[in-house]
Image (tube, rainbow, N blue to C red):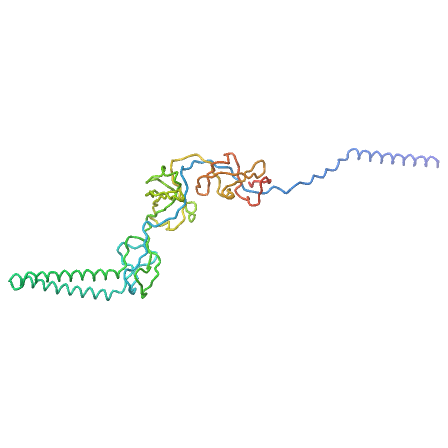
Length: 356
């Protein structure tokens, strides 16, 4: 009996050991291999940039130049005689009419001279009338009558001279315009030729600009042009050529043109810097990129193109500037993508990611 129990326990222990080995072999056969460690990336991550496709649009055919706006008429008012300012009769920056008195000088002395000359004229006229009567009755000679007539003429000339001097005490506007900022006040003593105030005619403005002599045959009076001003971005103004200087500058080999721009609302101001586009033909198809895409390098212009996820530095030849866009004459195709922001941190061949 005791031997049977021992045998039973040995068999049971052998079965448990066999079951444990079988379970271990089963788990080993169905276990999954551990994932492989990913290889470390080589180099820095791609740089995030903004990019845009080259635009195709129709633009006017012409040439671009620069110039400055000028008043149609401009003058610095100065007195012809010395005197003390008695009154200022205008408001700075406000319109004035032709012939309007702007500044009155003290005219007491000149006014007295006018009165004196007027009295002399009256006296000379009376003497001439008496001389005529006496000469008709034969009491005086023809020579005495002629002398009275000449004295009247002299008195009248003196009166005209006194009146002209008195008129110079009034500084009048020579044309319709806008008064500038005065540099004198009531009570100031001014000398002949001293600056008082500038006057600008601004309903029409002029712009002078230069173009290369090779375009002289294509330029003519009445030609249309467009103006873009840095002070007024996004706005375009139109004008017309009114004169062409017959003299070509021998140093710069250029010719000066003068154009007029209507300015009834006085939106434009004399002295503003203007970019002028003189139009030669109606329209042409052109490739355009944002001005922000250009990278100046000396006399050249460069852009970064996006090719296969990399920034490729490319030289381009530009043409006209139209607002915030620039015409590309050579170096790009309509299918190219150019980087418009983030170029500062780029080098040729760097990996980039375009911001969506």
